[in-house]
Image (tube, rainbow, N blue to C red; front, side, top):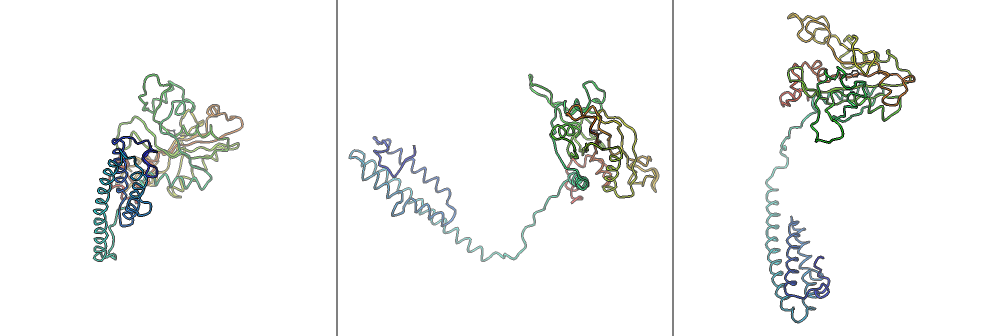
Length: 373
Ligand code: PHE
């Protein structure tokens, strides 16, 4: 219970000299804490008033409630304790008063000498990372045709990353996605991994909402690749998913072509090649004409180094959602259809901005970052 100066010592059960001493000790500590808040004359005055105030300052209350009402044996001890406390508090307050006043005067002096019209110190502002900017650009394009943006966890379960995407255990495509598994304590209920693609969010989204679905999912993904100019163990994708009762392959190609032309400009050409993903059927690989050589495969100095003469650059995997996937999320494959795609963002950004080393995105060299304010 805290010491009170509103009650007598007897009311607070004080019977010995030691108890009296402890009470004064506590008041001194209380004062020391209050002093910490003193910053200027006003806060100094508040503390002074609380302790030395003539009407109901702590000193007045100690005199009235403790000293005057102390019983005969303790009176002398209370008197001594009180005197010591008062001396300490008076002394500290006087010292602080001169410090606070000197501080204020010092400030007045400085103020007169400082030229407040001089320009201030310019602190450099950062900017958003190029990958973030590209995410934003892509989001804006898909926003404009009715998609919304969702994000999901980078640590996933094998169920969302593989099984529910129709990739059972031992399926060979798991080998293409060299996966980082978490080193979990023994006895943990299941495995966890760093997602190898943003596709798990297809499942999480459909589990949560009924069709129609139109989402894109920007995010970071991980694979056990050795770093070089085109590989990194962490990179970025934007997943896309549209599911409704009447979505056709035409909606799919139309949407993707719209996106590519918005992003790279109207002159870029697009093409599909058949491909394979366990969660889309049919699956395609989507290419754009090389933005460096205009699709010709050659530049003034010979074979185009970017597309290696092919005239095309592979940009993303996509396809119509495999009906088997609907089975995992409780959609009726006879009633709905849709498409999905996964765009490699680092690749896209490198192409659009002429960057030839993916590592530049992760090294965060300010000289690089500054080129994309
Ligand atoms: N998730 C696939 C990958 O990372 C890309 C993809 C997404 C393919 C959606 C089809 C549909 O390679």
